[in-house]
Amino acid sequence: MRIFIIYVQHYDLKSQPILIHSTLIKTRLKTTKLSLKNKENNQHIILYNRIPKTASETLNYLFHQQSHKKYYRMIHSNQYVSYNLSLNKQYLFIKQIYTFNPPILYERHVYFVDFLHFNKQQPIYINMIRDPIKRTVSNYYYSRRMCLKKNRCTFIKNRTILNYTLDDCIETENEPFKCITLEYGVTSAIPFFCGQNHLCSSNENLSWAVEKAKSNIDKYYTVVGLTENIEQLLFILEKLLPNYFRNISLVYIKKRRPHINFSPRKWRKELKPNTHLILKDLLKFEYDLYNYIKKRFHEQYKQLQLINKIHE
Image 1: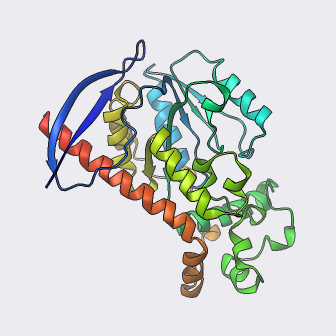
Image 2: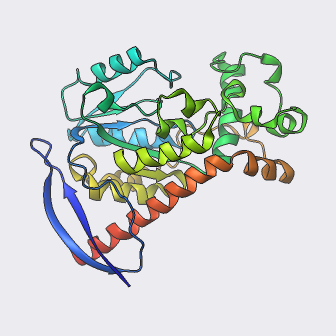
Image 3: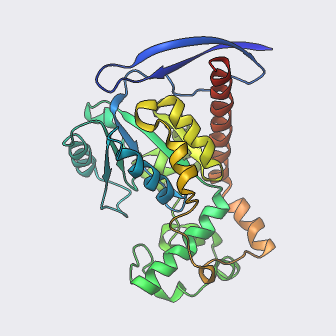
């Protein structure tokens, strides 16, 4: 039996974080780095650097509805594909965020940006991740649909590969790993947590990139949820950041919009069993990170449930 202390902070957006209680809890849960008590983060800025094809449109919808209650201002970026930023663009990105009157929630598809490098407080980072194979399949076909139907060929330069199914690509490509890279229309989740260093997105040293991503998550992310468990994510957001997300679960239950940006059936292909096995191996570093986040997320949820029951 392990005994440890969990500190949960509620934030007053007009002042510094206020520690309102600490609780001794007897539990068999292993301790985990939950990023619950980092007082150095800027409590007036939430940055949701969302990963493509993780049901982020659903979260955006909920966050937008919540902003109508005037808890905060929701800022939607119109930059959808510039994930990797030069030092100058990182500086301008941070400068832009600081032009808005707080409190704000800023969302954008962008790799993790280290505000401390530019002598600014780190914002409250949040994100959501999805099972790597499911996200890869969704991303692969979504990119092709956007390219063929809307002529938005953002990353795919070779149009001859547009009609390849993922099965075709894996079976015929001399280097199957290429099928799950940006040039084939698939983004990696790793650099969204690892950051702007070229090693985070170059596939040169994926083991280093994953460890850097884990370190950033532990230090700077209040929560990283799972697409498969969105209701649990909303519960965590309500408990850890109530001044932003109070009763957001009720919005979700009322609207019941499980997936807003959903691909038509003809653009969703079932994988062959052999392709699934190959992808499992190709995505081993993605799964390493995913499973780390999954464990952290479930421990957060269980611990906050315990606190919630004690104070009912």
